[in-house]
Image (cartoon, rainbow, N blue to C red; front, top):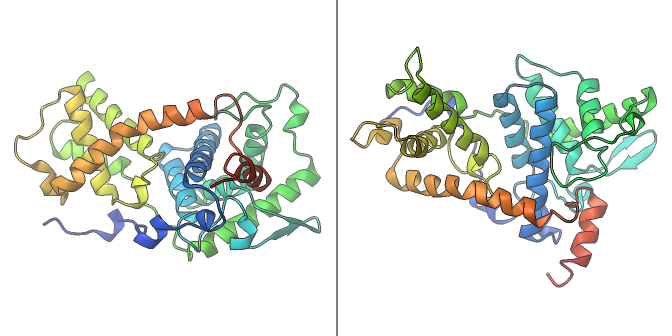
Length: 311
């Protein structure tokens, strides 16, 4: 059995955290909770792109965002303040919405990397993204009027306070355990170990690597929360297995995944889960094609009291 290197493992969600969340306790249906989480992850991804952050850092931020809303002690989409408290800015109480948690997750992940971002950069990007007249998909076209996303010094100071307070709340909710290992670099190392990604890659090996990383990026949006239920080494192996089959790249005929301490049952589950990610993402975007997905605490509350009144 391969050694269990602590640096290649993550803290996984417990059964209680997966079965009960702060949002569900506050009456948010699972279907709506999944939609809001997906919108938050898309927002985090779009902000990371605009900040020109490496995908590894963006993936870490998306994992922190996901972990924040896990379990009964995690954040709640509907009444966030009931779970994590109120912050105060400009002598006014402010309820944190999911975009505040998204910004804090990205800011924190970047801070721990070689590409730290200033609070002003993060605040400017989120103001830009949230200024669009429609919120049906991220990244979205911004408002035509630059004044819609311009942050004056006063507005920036208020946004900065919320960002730093949100960071504190995320840290406290996660018990300051924000260590995250993503499987992207592990997958590339495994491809080299298997001899299908030489030092001078061919077009086929490049396509294999790109397809592998593509599955790992899709899995960040998985409704099964694959990144908090499986270790990064297992995620990497499953992505390689599926990508190699689709790219018609021959891998060792033996059960090579066992070398990386992955059993057939986990491998089979993840292959099915990976294949289901893209259809689920398409269905989510189709669901909210005609109207905006609720994002703020007030919008989510209205959605629960309206569409899901009989839930």
